[in-house]
Length: 223
Image (cartoon, rainbow, N blue to C red; front, side):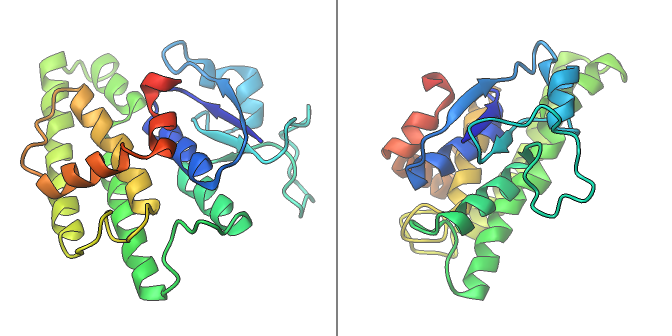
């Protein structure tokens, strides 16, 4: 297995957690977002979205990784989008499960994960923040106001949603897709000076997760 990632990318961080929970061995290939390596010709051929993470279940990736027409097996190139990768892993390696078995509970778990992946992260990732600076002339202070505004909106939702459950983790008794998305987002929020003290339920979950080796091993400081 091969994971193309950037150590501080929260989307890559999610996939590292999932791989570790599954106990899978994988090779990491660093793609520096700060150096725009995701836009290089070589990486663009592998991942047309020019984003991290990128994942291949094989140890090697075909040289002509851009060819997809007529390929029903999907065995060229790499898979992007962290949630697609994580759900692929959960289907191929079902134990321990990252989603509940009950359809309604599974949908609720996905709901929490998607608050992070769809509502918070897209508005706060590096390319959006860089665009605010470079194209719109937004000051650093104004950019942080933007960043913190969307974090506040999202974390308020996450605190309410997770408080429905009296479980050790976000909505389950063991770490799930929801926790895998939550922990990297909390890391990024704290890194940019966001005050998380108003979200006690989320902080309790974070403390519990960070005591577990799959989360510790995936932490940006340990890459």
